[in-house]
Length: 554
Image 1 (cartoon, rainbow, N blue to C red):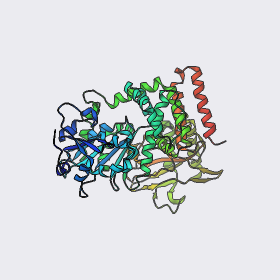
Image 2 (image 1 turned 60 degrees about the vertical axis):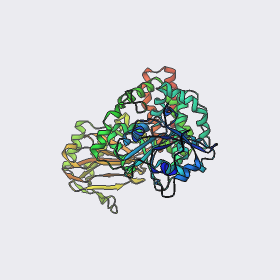
Image 3 (image 1 turned 120 degrees about the horizontal axis):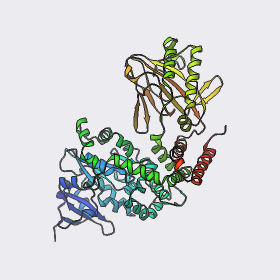
Image 4 (image 1 turned 90 degrees about the vertical axis):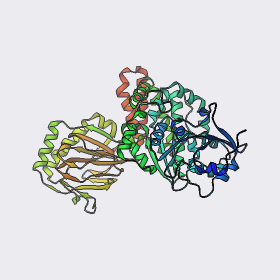
């Protein structure tokens, strides 16, 4: 029989992985690991059990005796909803020499399933903070349902990243794979039980709705954990948004966790072989492009079921604040819209008006706003001309109407930024007094009139969730975004930034409900001609009924 490791040997470094726990028997399975074996392993659950493995069964009391009060408790953590690239991210960060990546040890699952997990969680942080040297930091990626006990695992002052995907992407991803479909059905009863106190959904009628229920369970688990962790530093990552800029997202994750790495090193990792392999089994090819293809195929094949599943989530959110917040968070990527609204002739006309018109300092409309340093058109005759032109262009855009559901639009105002001018971080006023009445600003809109190559600086930065989005669009393009989001205009360092701004009152003031209706409109526009006529009529009925329920009366 193999000898039991001495407490000092367990505490010394990460050689003895705490791989599994039997709470009933009060024993833990330790497995001897090298740094390279940690790096290679996709999972540290029972799939790693192979002949010749050095495993020892140790009383839990022996492990706790090893981890004294002086033990490190600074492990970083990744929690996630499943199928959202957490293994890929953990592998990439594990390529940094100062990071020991510990991916899905079974012990955490054993703990989450135990009724008395509180008797063990106090020691977990110390166990998984062990590394192979003081210069290293541990990064622990848990299994998805371990997020239920995340507040008990992460000590005060430490850091965690929560990973997710938008519901439509998650649902399509689950429908795209045979293994994920099997997982959906096997775990459905457990997930229903887990989320019973958080969310009430109608019984799923198909696999898309079953996937939506899975998303609701896992996302509300993360939202609930975040509520219980106010004294920890938590970041959120949308996987599909991350794939659009993997070097940038990898850098943000490294900064969140306090991992030292330079930009070139992170870019090399983010664009290297890992991004082109299936991170759970590196022998298989996989890539962001292939993921998008699979999602598109699943969406096209199951479009009606997916639309129904999203509507099911929306109905559930009306009685579940956690689900409403989860949907709003995932909807942040859909809460803004970039549109081309002006023709070249209309851009030229706006520039012509601006070139000959009188401008005054922008604080004339808000003298106490010290963040504002720009100029605005101040010539009533030409202001009316430009405002009418810009208003007509916006209302001419079907995409704008479908996205904003406008009931009133403030007369668009041309503004100008010269070198050294900027507009500091702010949100827009809730109500704007106009000659014809008061407008509630649900959405703000910036229409770009200058060619971006003619001025330096001057980008519009909009804070959407955890991401600061930067926009410097071609002339004639507009961005529409929620008026209550923090945004700013960077200082112009050379040239002239000419834009028009306006504010929109929406028939659907709730941003999530508005974005969901827009998604349904997109599905109808893109797929309507290929749908069965009866089902297309049913989709239109859903759209109109939701608009009746959520929309304000004319």
